[in-house]
Image (cartoon, rainbow, N blue to C red; front, side):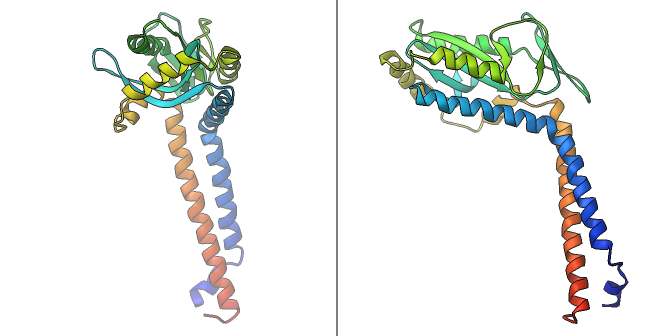
Length: 247
């Protein structure tokens, strides 16, 4: 036990302090991801309120279009007057894009990243829903950026999480329930793909891109923080046991 006695008494304190320091730094790197998750939670909380108004909300649907391509829809809000297809996008930083552009740009501290124009995805969603339901219900598509700051062309289809919540609540108010709502819901439930193995691949559309590297750094720092804290506790425990003659 001489080796334990040679370890300075302040060692556990130093290790614990380093652990806390790494944890604080990891929070900084994880911040874009955390902000995106907070925004996503806000949207989901709003969807739960819509259910109380009588809307039917279906989450993470996989639908096949006439060509056999799989279309992923994050959230589908069905009322008696319209269907609102909602996509939640977790990109952080500055979001730049135009209505007609093939790709949009996400600018972060790490650099610039391109991702598909969400309006192209909207068109695919509208086509697959109209193919199933015809024109009996209006189809509205919205992409809600839960973290990034939007720049470029103004459009009601691409908004912030807060604007999205206000928009869908106004759309549902007073027109939630009815026979067309139940009819549309039954059709969509019956034709949705049950095999979820392709879900993660289809959800690659909403990949956090510029957040991913930061998140990996944060995870590594958190792991290092946990190891240092465990080491600090182990050293402190051994020194205490030696001092009291337990070992």
